[in-house]
Length: 384
Image (cartoon, rainbow, N blue to C red; front, top):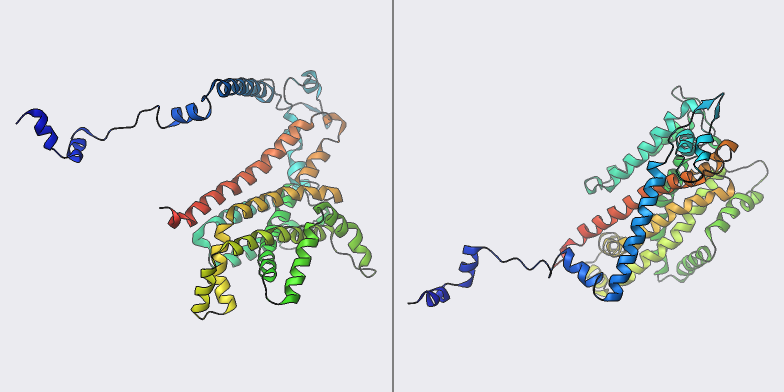
């Protein structure tokens, strides 16, 4: 028998195991193939790609020069006044990060007493820790509710004070990042369950409940958030009895909750409608009550389908908390704008806004990445 005939009698898997599996050509798969197919598929695509690469590199080099190479990080302070002549001498060629170094406490904590800044700083860390714990699936038990109650109570004690030897700080002195986190956290935590009830109400067979939920959603979604904040801040106190005054921060918080719940309700309703009818029929066949069917079978599947739009609404609401500056609440953005009113720092707003934008980006990007991981984990059984 010839060598060729002998080689032909050997099964193909045995041949591959002897010499190892063959790898596909580099030009067929991988980043090189992707670049050829998407960036250099024709002469026009190649020209546009090269032009964009040139512009991006030029912009990146200019940004690095402005933000790092030519930047000034600190300035001397004489008699309590910052000497910003060096920053102004740059004429825009470099960033003056000294304004952030000088005003970072005011940006983060507003007009909170300077010597008590450790309290709102600790509250920010507690909020971040609460987010991290809530994101871990092993904590998704009833004990998580106790963790939320305990953490939020501790935050309230730290911010207000008046007990345990802490000096009392009125709510009008609160500001900065901690206000943004308070508005966003309570807004998401309270708007989400309200939105589920409204979404279920819109699908109710009881005409009165359905009409009430439809009216609420259409009325709230038909006006901008700024109008609701104005109503809560200016108009609502006019209808209160004389001598009764509700805190402005609480009124703004309620407006944000109602606004977010209306948008979230439509997202949840979309998930309920996307669920196959067979799921409802199977739950009815098991003899479950309405709330058992909804809580154990319908809602978990519906919410899993709408994780991306839910998180998108959360991110939008987190950023919309900056609109409270219209009614004079010192959130992060308002504190940043107020920090550059001082004549010595006027003209250096770009550095302030870049810093504030970076803080917003960190929180929003974390929510986005977490939602992607959660969606992939919950839908892992669907991958075939």
